[in-house]
Length: 330
Image 1: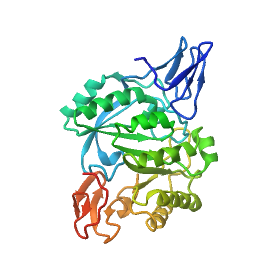
Image 2: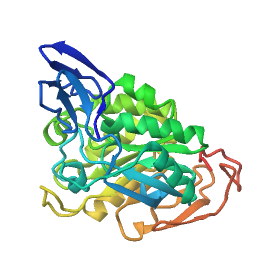
Image 3: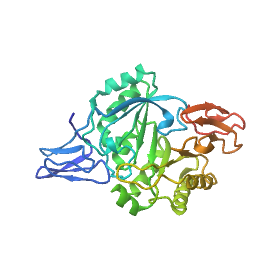
Image 4: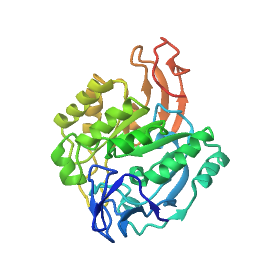
């Protein structure tokens, strides 16, 4: 379904400039932006994916991954097709990069009603890149808020500040990918840039619950130097932001071996010296590195086995053993 896009300007001669993300694509008549789903028709920019849903499911909130936002709950999760990044190792390439992916049409009212019917307390915009779906996400999120539901976004963080600020008026939690800490890597692999992502993290961290994920990709960002740079940057911003380090597996256009587990465990051991909450993902059993520990007394506040969650010494967002406030949203 087409709907006139937000965040663009007309530049004459039936051309437009999209101002949703830092690509700031200049789009001629009949063409679309880098994301593939924002199209110029007659000098007006349209979203071609409004209400077009590729996947809808009830997921554990931990799958987003969000470990400190309503732990142990299920959340209605929806996604669409398209992305403003071009990661050659994309783990969801079949919907993010294949614009022929099948969709089903849902109105915002239908999505909110579906969440209510399934006993979900919120809606997650996930699977591909929800920022490029912003018209629909905002309409769903505003309606969800009015019906007492919270909103979660899983995003690459590559967005301009005006649309981000508008989204943050109705988004309660974000998991933001921090794919690398090198500008040249973002340019080469994502066809994007690092600095706007860092700005998104900084802005969002002051407005909603934020957790970060770094997929450690063999041969691209798997050096201790780069991982230490990420650790230091997060620590300087807020050492209490949860950081998920995730294991890459070969897929899409990238066939390097899966991430070395010993490397990930060493990164974990280095990270916990500066960050309060670090988690290993995409590893069977996670080697004990998936529990939430109190940063003061080290008691197990939340234990996790896969997506099975058991609260230990967590009480009203604090450690029941020592009383430390943990900023866990329950």
